[in-house]
Amino acid sequence: MSNADLANLSDKLMLTTVLMYVVALVAYAVDLGFGRRGAASSAEAKAEKTAEAKVEAKAEAKAEAKVLVGSAGAATVDAAPAAEKDDDGGGGERRQVDAIRLAVLLSVLGWATHLGVLVTRAAAAHRWPWGNMYEFLTAISFAAVTAFLVVMFRYRARFLGAPMMAAAVVALGVANIWLYDSVGPVSPALNSYWIAIHVTAAIIATGSFSVAGAATILYLLKIRGEARGAAAAGFLARVPSAETLDRLSMRVTMFAFPIWTAAIIMGAIWADQAWGRYWGWDPKEVWSFVTWIIYAAYLHARATAGWRGRKAAILSLIAFAALLFNFFGVNYMFSGLHSYA
Image (cartoon, rainbow, N blue to C red):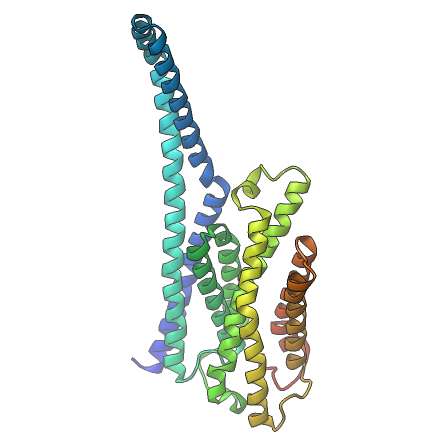
């Protein structure tokens, strides 16, 4: 295939990816909003049937002759309601299973086509596919979806599906509507093997931090709902406890932080080779370091000062906001050696 054909295929795969993520988002939202009601109804029906069986067993022990007649009548009266409850519960459980299976299937298929977008773009450009803002945001979205799938399968965190798919759809929408750039060569400063090391590390860390940010936002909503006595209603009842969300956010942050640290160090080495100095207080360098400081403060406070709960969550969100500003704000609001927007 020619470079133009590969670039065209990359654009078509991008459209396919967005459509799959949109449908997956809807399926995750259905599961988050209604999925466990069916399971709860089924469990309640089973509990009622078990209680009825115990009552019948006790009645048989008291008076076998009377129970035979009474239980026959009771079975006739209760048969229809019991069957109806079982049908309702079973149907709800099937709806739950179908929704989450569809969501996971489309997430995995969308991830595969998303990977295809990057591979075909790289083949068309004959370089690493993160040389401009369009490609960089596409790669970060891919890293975020990858991190979400890993966390979902490892910790059964399907409740993150709706916010993460929403974030991926918005990011890819922004990339295609406002940031799209045709396949072409990169600036001389980016024509280095370090782009495969430094930028890749930054992409992986940013995608992972996005998952931690989603878990932190859910945590704050959860504790707010609990404070208002509304945790048992709505989708808040279908996410895990606040403690679980807090712990999940910290674990993902602990994974991403060393990678972000390595990205900064490797960026300094690349800067020395490209510009003759390790550190020049460029806006991108400054905000990368500010982001590192805040995440380091978050992890340090949790490890030494015993920070838990709302204070730690707010600090984590401040760090995530600095990360987003480092990506969007620095590239469009400041001029510097790293501004390729």
